Image (cartoon, rainbow over all chains, first blue to last red; front, side, top):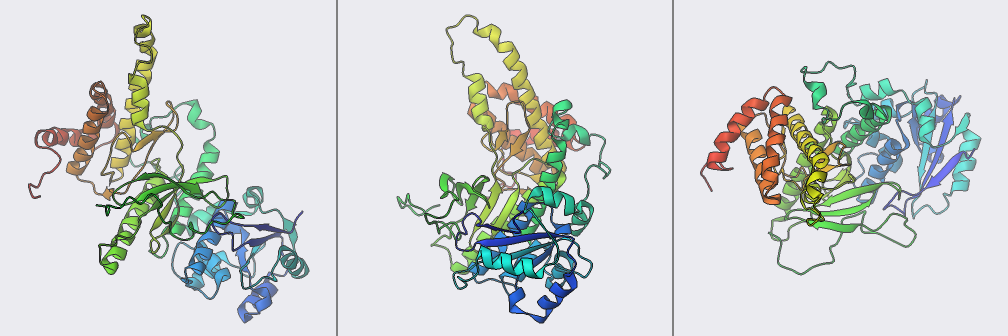
Length: 212
Length: 256
């Protein structure tokens, strides 16, 4: 399995992403300490995969961070920390690192490196070599299937303060009737997909509105 | 409102303006232009995810500081209402990304026809000479009636969470399929209030839009109101208020 995946986001061809996904990482404390001491070799966006819902969720944060970078509007030290910050629904930088970045008991991680025109020596190969040598974990695919396994939906809901509609009490008895008038078996099919997709949509909206 | 310039080539805000041959995302294509905003079709993150880009260009005739403030306010107001609707389960386009400094909002792409197009398709007989035409009408009439019911329920759902669309026309609603869910679009004028007056005006605007779409559509609108009235607690009161609004028109305060 490819340990590092290179991709370019739409409209941002000048900033390729190199993304490594690792499960059951043993040396999180070490990686975190390198971040804290500011070792430039370890300048990645290190993210706790438990709080990532989907690939889109992750990449939307990258999109915002890179857009901020190119507009000279970074709120944090660099584009990598900005990615972690962009995931957070509020403006507290330290809190965003605590919640979306690495803590000592983090198990699964995503490491992202952003390529820039000023850093032509950063390539898929160099990032792969560095991550493979320094992250003690099992490489996983950057895919929704991975996050479906590593993600903790209950915790994600809590972080973004999104109530579970199905468990929340409907405000009035007429509520079910209001579900756009579509009832019966056809609305049941694909309901699960709609649920995750809807959670993702709300999260993207909250991330987009952050800082407003 | 727009400066009278025959400018067909519109400049896009960053990052949508930097398209090289290596970029797989499609160059945004202009779909429609309003007084305030331009709407483009483009992609988000991957080339296979279509989305709508709503761009509010800066107005050269406004003071730069005022211009920035207004653009920011309007983008954020629209985005906040959309996120709120999404949270409450009203079908609206999801907010994918926003940049109020650059003046754009990226929204989920909603496929489908506008209600206006649906009505046109329904109400314009393709073959008027066919004698069997009248008989074919019955299943379609039922379908049409159900469409009206679902419009009423959708608007009721929106109003029940305290959101007023502000520009509810037959062009601002898209059923993903004729039998499917209805998605409301264009919340550029939306406000959050719970007053019956505002709800009634919203309905009145929709009623006028129906009447303007097609002569037969006015009749159909009764189906919308029927569904609306029974759908939530404040529905009946809003309908009562609608009768007052009909008598005097959209504007209550006689200023302006």
